[in-house]
Amino acid sequence: MTKVLVLYYSSYGHIEQMAEAMAEGAREDGAEVHIRRVAETAPDAVVQAAHFKTDSPHAVIEGPEALVAYDAIIIGAPTRYGRMPSQIAAFLDTTGGLWARGALNGKVGGAFTSTASQHGGQETTLFSIITNLLHLGMTIVGLDYGFQAQMGVDEVLGGSPYGATTISGGDGSRQPHAEELAGARYQGKRIAQTAAKLLG
Image (cartoon, rainbow, N blue to C red; front, side):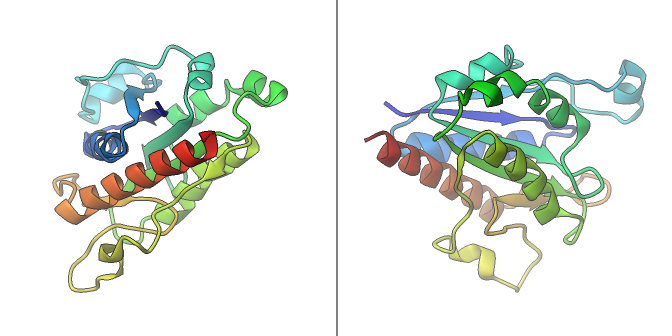
């Protein structure tokens, strides 16, 4: 059975919801899926002042060695100035040993993100994650145009061929749209399918 990890960081819960949708999609293809989050690195005073979401049903990942057990790794994070936030970067910075021995070569990877605004850096954030995955030797699967909902222009929606996305609004009040969650499920299923084919 294909093993898939959905690894994320979420300040306000938007990415957490997208992670659940990614996992649902991967499970549709019969994969064993685990959802983990990275540790919070912001000081408690910042977390409290910014009203970060501090409760989560998902455990913090044990460390970089945990990645080796998976056939596919999907990483999600909100944008910070058009790139991944420091919490995800700090975790990825611990994977040097995996890179040195090629431990993730040939595994499948993908990325997803959220931004406050429609043009708030979704694609650059996805590429900041994807770049790390490519250096780790992974094969990348995005949100292909088989998911036609990303082509619509009748309403403001996330979605990019580089990965599923959502838009939170400047105050974080907008929750992931049904089509954005559908995009995450679609990408999760595609990643699981690709990993299964490569394993076969």
